Image 1: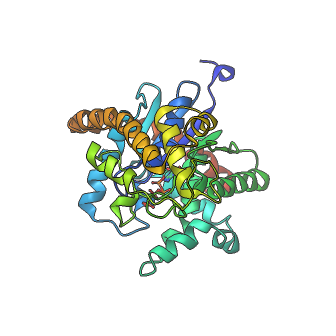
Image 2: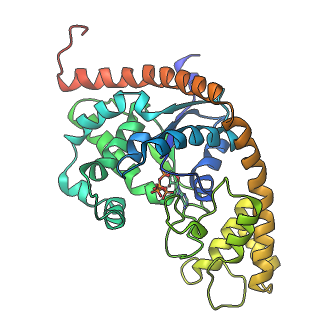
Image 3: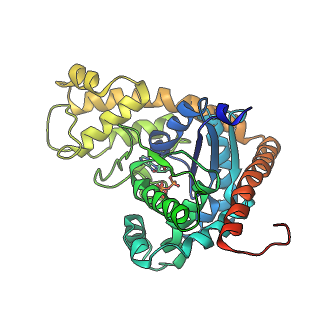
Length: 337
Ligand code: AQP
């Protein structure tokens, strides 16, 4: 393929720090699937990010394979995308070190995810949590990504990535593509079912707050029925003032593809309990095939291992090319230059 025929590049990743949730589909996976045919895609399982919070080693290993299987179960095509584990490609840590020397302490201190996670993990506010966005910048820049499809919470990190790319390009010479975030209009921040002011999270200690993609149909029904709403009576989309019901409308939209406006128009006068029943039914129909595919794919560990091995080899070749260029430009001596 000639250079002019090259497809633009996507990089994105998910931490294997638990079972994946409906939030991951809404903010990330469904957009990866939609974009995969038109882009050259690198979809990473970011285990190095996951250890910024203390992990049980056996769980981390299991969730890494779960994550790969879920990528496939939600529709990522291994023929279209390079799927790999971050720690299998050492260039991520190496470029992160270089970028850390270009990042201001104050700049890193402004990252809201660090502030939030420091509160959640007050007993373990480690330096890795602080430098997390720099490692994320390295992830993205190594592959010369043009687009980074993420949920709303990651927008600030992509902005930092852009600043670092531009800074490096200005100090040395053009080296990195400057990536754009890709944030969906709806579902960019699915909220907790138990506290609609909080993001739905895989590590929420309250399992009722989160729809996991491996939840069985009964669990999905139960969680939706118990979702916290508000004291209103109509089905209206107003995330600021009616976050609970608006979140359920976004979930319904995700499960059925019916436009938000059409849902509101059709269901405005329904009771909350009627609407919750409809959301639960649609969500069961949406999640069940994903769960079934996941179970099939996850049961074949040998195939997953071979997919991740070849993914890492391919990713490492591309990443190494960028890293070599960076090392040369910053003045690291090498006998190969
Ligand atoms: N609730 C969500 N709504 C929309 N997008 C979401 N994403 C995660 N949760 C939601 C998007 O998924 C991608 C990868 O996320 P991650 O698991 O690497 O990190 P996270 O955002 O910290 O997700 P969790 O579930 O909250 O993980 P834990 O509990 O381990 O911290 C990102 O694009 C993210 O925006």
